[in-house]
Length: 241
Image (tube, rainbow, N blue to C red; front, top):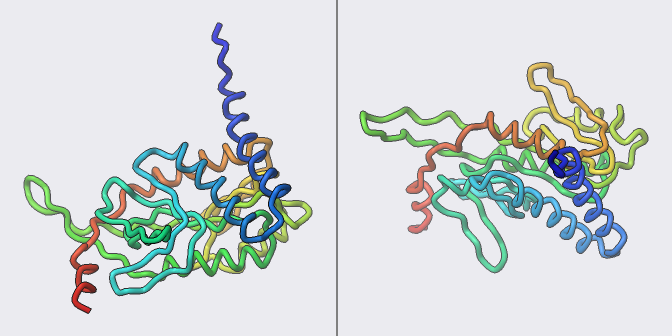
């Protein structure tokens, strides 16, 4: 009989995230410091548990036309097929073609934060993305369709009661277009996801929210496929400007 317990392992993953977020909440009074520490907890989890083709970081996103997104707390991006990531003085800049998902990460969810997260997600989705034909041994595949960029929200607590109830759903429903939040986690209570076919949100209350969110995210990333072949020369034009 094995001494290992899969249920206990999955529970421990969530408990580690929840405890780290709770420690951040209790230990840091400065809002900026608290926010940075919360982001680092989520980034650390994603860097540890996502497949290695993905990387997570706090970053700005840029397109080949020179447009920049707002600063994004957590960007999940490709490191297997993306040819370049800019890093300068602790600032990370990621080409729009490389992005799989973007998240706003804060301590507590409320209506203002949801609206703020929607605005930041929209600033990424509005960016231009290139996609080149893909050469292979017998010819050339046509340009790959652009993958949808997932948007989300990551928090420790919720200002609403119930935490994942009608008020939260109303705030999320205010923008289901460019600013749509597809997936998120409130680590003390549960996670949510958006069903595009039904245009409705599903809220799941459970005792291992961080683990459940991670599995849901990985599942959605699997269906995203691979990022398109980036037109590097479209970015290279800026060398002469």
